[in-house]
Image 1 (spheres, each protein chain N blue to C red):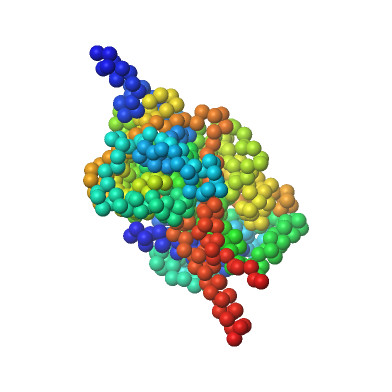
Image 2: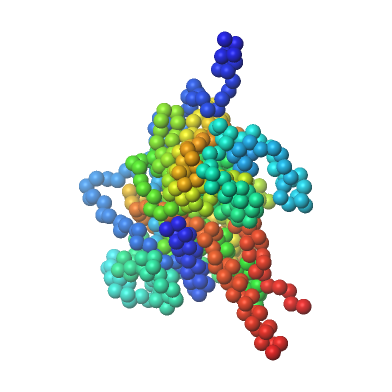
Length: 348
Length: 258
């Protein structure tokens, strides 16, 4: 058990990484978990009251899942249509659970053509339990456009230069490998949170006086966010996950994040990335997560997505990525062996 | 008489303090805050003299600072065969210490690494976020639960005994160490921690360590923990895998072609 858990997590990381590499647009991939609990219908008679912590703040605590197959961006054929009707939503849910998937669903790692590895080891992805976002949105991005705004020329150039620099050197050193492979920043620990269909969506929220802690199962990534109105840390301190400060607006927790490292690059963003996340509890088993991303050096305008979070059963496992990471050394070693063999051939 | 009085007056962190901590909204002692040990326990739990550091070019910057030790009774009670393994670990410190590689530290080492940690105290769970390696654990304060798997940070069940938070830690993997001197444990290690407020800005920390595969009897470490009272105190990001990559993967870098 001891070793196998560590290596299983490393393997899971590897699969996620390889799949992400195959489907860069999705940016979300991992073997699924079976932990999700379907939302229960609330009892009709009783009006719901917002649960509060002993010090009177809205209580967001629990283990939540953002798993959904609703795509980030709206399928082209749907135009400005933001919501499905009840009937359309029911039909679509039936269709996907029968395995009939079009552009309307984003399966990430669970897509059949994305599978190169046997993810049944991790419980498999049970398509009969696939869920579209309960808000019946056609895309996680809100608004008539439903897509990430076009990337500015300067951002395109910045990202192209970065990619060009690495091209042909992908296997030279650990520095050339993706951040997720290096256990520095996995796709599902990045903020803003973007869901995947299967594993990697568990978030545990713990609230103490003056702070809200977010623990992502993936890579045990933790943010402890002060809610006392303090300012951001000095601008010269740049962090992979940025600096988050929060405050309460009515029943909503609002989190403001700046100070990103340019190396984090959320969908090609730069270090001017500014995020505003909003968490609102809407039912015993539901929190609405909304984020707005803006970066004047990357997108022509800010954009907003909304993702329903559903209460799930734990436990949250320890997802120790770096400790079991044999992938980087295996990949680099493989590349060195190939080079040696090529050199031998040349001298023959 | 004089002797007795002076002994009684001598502050011993092991004594049960009379201090009563402020209460949380649900009436429990309030432990929330950013804390840090201020000692050399991570260098060596046992008492030790100052010594040269392992890398001569770092000079006095990374020399080993002296410390009186935090082990009750001064000595860790290794089984005879295991004392040899500790020596071996110590000799091969830089090669074997999981801290050098930025691996998760386990408990109790997470507490006295030279980095702050933050307690986020809720009713049903107490989350501890450690700056080092972004390590984290959630102490379950409800009905006792069983670990779903062994892990680096172990599985923590807690309860209150008066002023004291008692945490029972099981299911730790054998891969973590206690310090930079090669003190170690097996996968049978069982740790019981006690966090007791001793003043507004200090906690008393005790950990009893039991591991019949490695030690002849349970033993205990004791130390105060200090609150970060700076106005701008925060845990900052210390994702150290990237600082260990050159060490771990540097030798596999592509050689420059001549």
